[in-house]
Length: 337
Length: 198
Image 1 (cartoon, rainbow over the protein chains, first blue to last red):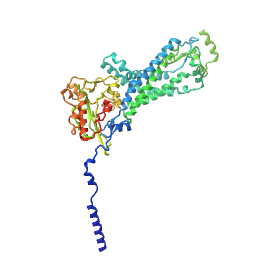
Image 2: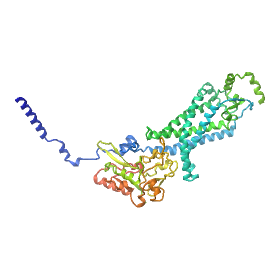
Image 3: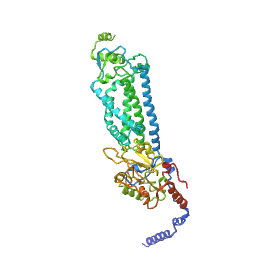
Image 4: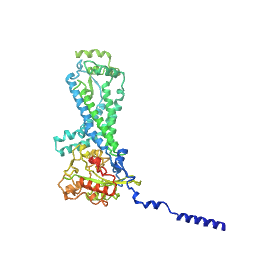
C-alpha cells in the first residue's frame, strides 16, 4: 500500500518537473525578423510552368471556375484563327481547283458504247433514302459549320451584324439538331453497304490503272470500285470521328474539361474540312463528272452499258443472280452501234 | 485615355468573397453565373494564396478574336465588352479565354447555351448608358457615372484594385516596396503581356 503511494508521488513529481521545463517553441516565436510570409507562397510563373493551368479551390458550385488561369486558350485561338482556316482553305479551294482543271481537261466521262436503252436496278428505295437523308444533312451541317469558321471574314461584311447573327443562330440550331439524323445515316450506311466495301485485289488493280480516270481505260470493278470504297470509308470513319467529337461539343462539360473541349473542337474542325473536300469530289463524279452516274442514286437504275463499263464484275454477278442469260449480252451491244 | 485593368494583390486577399457578392448584387447576375470568383491555391497548406478573378479585359482579347459573329468590342478605356444581341451562344469565347470569364445561362435541354455573360468592368454594354435596357442585359454602368467597379471599391483589405493600369501598378509597387514582398500581379502576363517588377 505504502509502496504504491510512494511510486505515485514520484510519477506526479516527475510530471510537474516536465511541465515546468521551458519549451523551446515560444522562444523562437519571439524573433519576428526571421518571419517571411512569402517563404512557401505559391508563384504564378512556377505553377504555370509546372501544370500549364492554375487550378485551386472555390466556393461556388461551378467547378470550371476553380481554374484560375488556362493560357492554353491562346494556343486554341491560334489554331482556330490561323491553322484551321489554312487547312480548310487549302483543302476545299484546292479540291475545287483540281476538279475544275480535271473537268476542263477531261470533260464528262461519257458512256463510250452509248446508252443501250435498257436499265438495271443499282440502288433500291431504302438505299436511296438513306443516302439522301445523310447527304441533305451533310450539306446543311457543312454550310453551317463553315459559317462558324469562315462566316465572320467572308459573310459578315456583306450583311448587317443583326442579320448575320440571325442567320448564324439558326445555322447553329440546324447544326445541332441535324447532327442526329446525320449520325443515324452514317450508322445505317455502314451496315447497309459494308459487305460491298471490303477492299480486295480488284481494287489494287483499279487503283493501279488510275480508276480509268485518265484516257479510256475501264478497270473491272464489283458493285463498288476502289474510289467508291475510299469514299465509303471516308464517310464511315470520318463520320464517326465527326460525330464523336461533335457530341462532346454539343454536351459541354458533361464529364469533360476545357482541354477535352478544345481538343474536340480541333478534331471536329480538321476532320470536317477534309470531309467537305472529299465530298466535293464525290459530288463532282456523281453529277457533271460522269454521264449516267447520277441516275444510280436518282432513279435507282443505271444503263446496262454504263454498268458494263464501270462495274463489269457487278453486272456479271447481277446477271447470274437474276438469271439474265448470257445470250442477251450479244444483242445489247448492237443497238448502241 | 486611361487603360482600365484589374489587379489582385494575392498577399492581401483573405478569401472573404465580398467582391463576388457585391458583383452579383450590383448587376443582378442570374442564377448559376458568377462574373467574379475567388480561387484559393494550395488550400490549407503553408503558402496558401487566394486570388479574386474575373474578366481581365485583355489586350488583344482572345474572346474577341475567336468570336464567329464579332460580338465583342474594346472601348477607348480598354474595357472588353460584348453585345448580347449579336452573341449566338456558341461557347468559343470560353475555350479561348485564359481566365474562364465567359459564362452561359442554360436556356434549354442538355447543354444549350444562352447569351454569354461576363464581367463588364461595371461599364454596361452597347446600349445607351444607364438605361433599363442596358441594365437588364449587362447590369449597372458605374463607369458612366464616374465610379470604378464595385468589387474593387468595397474590397475590405484593398487587395483587389481596379482602375487606370498605370495608377494601380504604382500603388502595388509601393506596397511591395514597403512590406518587402509580393507574389506579383496574377494574370497580368497572360492578359496584358507585362508584369509589375518591384
